[in-house]
Figure 1 (spheres, rainbow, N blue to C red):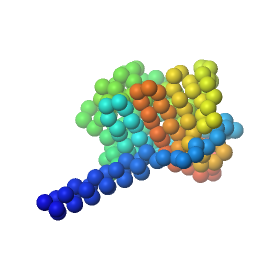
Figure 2: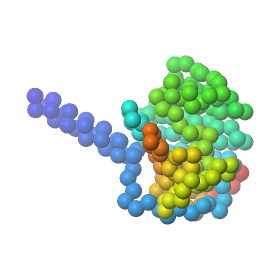
Figure 3: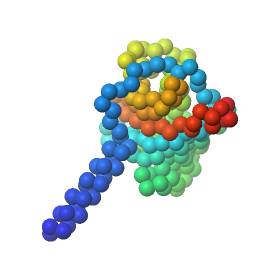
Figure 4: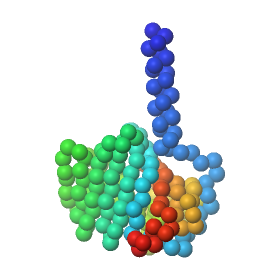
Length: 191
């Protein structure tokens, strides 16, 4: 019985450590500043945590944006691809590993197939440190801003133009992205 309890305790500690790896806490969020340069095309990767009222999700991601088209892959902490999203010319495709769904309502597809919906149409601006140009900023925060009933916080910056830890939240959902931006020389080649 002691052996079983020890195994359970070890597994619990490992899983809680895994969650903290993906949901990094920052003692003092960075002071927000608007980047001087925004990348129209990028290929980023990193870790994510998505906390909903029903369930928490953790894993890794890769997001490639080129000419307005988005290619996202979500992987489990063990590296297995659990979902891929492609948005090209306004049409979204979601592949959950079992079935492929296509349509114009990505939010609904994500909610039905993944259990959450990310504001992808807005997130590509926010993860670069800028508000959506066509909507007013509702309030200014020391570490970010509020827009469209979302709170966007920049907890850490990789450099002057690239946020490293971005947290986006509303009353039902909290998304934290820990982003690994390519080095500046690599970004210049893609823009």
